[in-house]
Length: 121
Length: 370
Image 1 (cartoon, chains in turn brown, purple):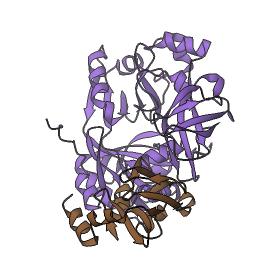
Image 2 (cartoon, chains in turn blue, cyan):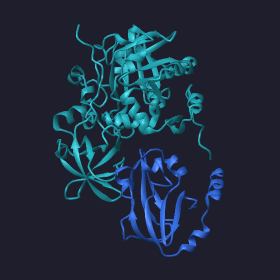
Image 3 (cartoon, chains in turn cyan, brown):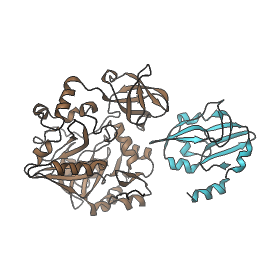
Image 4 (cartoon, helix red, strand yellow):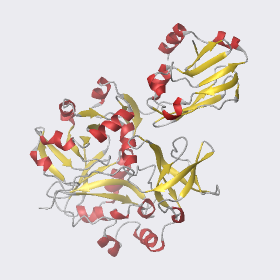
């Protein structure tokens, strides 16, 4: 599992990446009340806003940590957005993306590096 | 250039000790949440929420001219307000716009006790100081203010004073409570039964901890305070009402007393009376946002053809109802209950419908008639 400085995570399985926001990000947001996940077939580039996560007070963009084609947005989040708070790094995943270039993961942080990064914020 | 440091209430250390997430509001360092906004919101509707609202402005207006002078700037009849009662009112400018909304009441033998919004209190008090004539004097009270709200609030407070149980909605009394000289009103900003308690700042932490020692009571921050008042259909000054909005546009005509309208003897009376006669150009409505993300302040409201006709002034999820709600302004032609409209959220139109406010029924305590 790899993390970005914007608090997204990526888990690669073959050429399919599952993407979400970190527990730290979910805790910082507070109660998530609405999630907009991308449609299947949408093409994303690194750094594109591909989802929106909303707390009681505000909406935040979620940026694609890798490039590719969206296979599936997590439909559970439409009816149960609180899943993001309950299990941000598991059941609270946002989208599955067919990855065009997995090498970008080499530049992302592993768990230890991300945890260290959090202490600098 | 650094910002001026945020002011603190007497409970700042207490909030931090509870692990509150703090935010700047109205110039104060305030708790936005403790456990979480949704949990605190629901707890208040089901049990008792305790709020530190000490950032709000409290003052007394005294002198034989107190009421006559105060009345120059508000549309309420305060001569007829009985001792031990308060009324919601609006501080008006010459254009009939709302400079602030406030409570004003008679807990003492003479004069008035007023509570104003934190963000406006410096301007309100400067305005009143500059404009009250005769022997009317404004005295700012440096005291703490707690709100205790929810269906079990009365039961919690009954243990501390039998007199509180005897109060009805909008009663406002000077009461000896917690061994302190307090001013207590049976009112609030949540739609629930409850009290607002003014007490000496030095007693705030002791009383806060005493109330929290009751397992029915949990601390609630500004995040849930906002979602609760939205569900209750209550306007927030600076958002749903402001100095460019009249009471007629805002749907607050209940604050215009009959006698005051007849005498037209308050700031902005001519503008307000004309709007009452001719109808205002826009009116505040409640909206059920029927699809998509919550519509928030600033979102445009459009008719079914997509023409923009108004704007959302407050909006968000309704935790009690599991739907998204909003308040905004539209021309009267679009303000009928059931009117179908669109709200533009992130550029995309979402179906919305005009609904009545309050969104969640209020539960103010009306005393049974003797």
